[in-house]
Image (tube, rainbow, N blue to C red; front, side):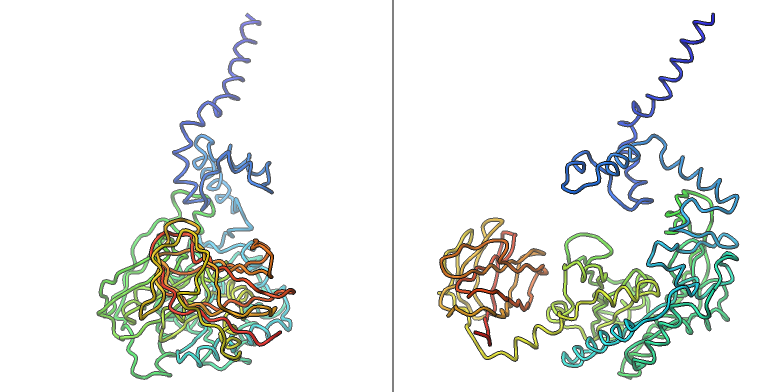
Length: 518
């Protein structure tokens, strides 16, 4: 009998150990939706292990946990248990406040430490101000309006719902000091801090300006920000009209980002606000980068909008609540997340040149505001100016295109040089310009069939083109004007253009090479 019990125990133990492994194939697909929703990433594949410089231990851990049976149910249950004793399952990401209010954790740009006043201002604030002024001057030269807007965090507007330990240690919070210093450095027509607007609105609308389990403001809070922003625009152009607000209602809403980051599937009920505004016409949405991704360049078009003008918005996710109002205010609203600027997908200069907006709006919430400005590339606004200061130089003609690959049908027409790319790696070299100098600036006005990458190779005489002597930039679908500086220690005698990695029709409207150095 004792031997039988031992066998039973061994069998039970083996089943417990092996069951999760045996069940993995059945849960691999089931867990995908939860991974996208809660972890905000795609499932890990075995091929990820062989990626160069990959952390093998972390990749293998993710591969197994991605396929763990009842993964999200286990996490959600554990998160709810911990919450019942007022403990966050991931306190660096989500903080439990009072009355089921959730707040962003310190992993996001040291938000908690900065709100508690544990960071001191330094001279970088003046450098950030200079970047905004540079951008404002660029917009002035382009003949477009400009404004930088900073919405407050939920913790700033509703500190009464923060946990008791979340207190300011050294006077006012860091962001309060930062905004005040920026306001001292910048005119109110350039920089708009919405903190006071939201705090004053709280006297009228109570707890309805931000949702309890999300980082973002509600539609009601978003309208307060939109309205104040429009007042700034109207002060500059009193012909502008804005969407009018008549009231709102509150209704139940379930899934919000902080609750998802906490790993909780259900409970923690929340609300959304439904606004009564006029006008509220439908508008079209086009993802200009070709994929339906909220961070990409998006075009909202509405022929029934109040103002026949366009606005380009470089922003974080705080703008999303304002889009219905903005899309009824401006005929064309172009919106792109700042990460797409910093990652090289777009440049502000390129977007301004191709989209020709009437207004450029930068918007980033408190925790993103400083980061956004630190990463803002000043050189985007300088290259055109540098090019125009150089003496006129070589201008490409159709007959100067030589040594082509995967290119057919080169024709010179009124609007430029047309050709067809027949492969994934077309290129041509340029003949007819005088080489021998070490520094050039290329201005290229080009139309491409889709989002792609353009490369410029250069080398000295009797050398081959290589990846070490190359400039690379992303180009948008349609027409782009880009400025490409080339500095090289040796003389530059040959230039090759790889116009894009897509088959289809291309047009070089203009290509000019200038230099003012020997």
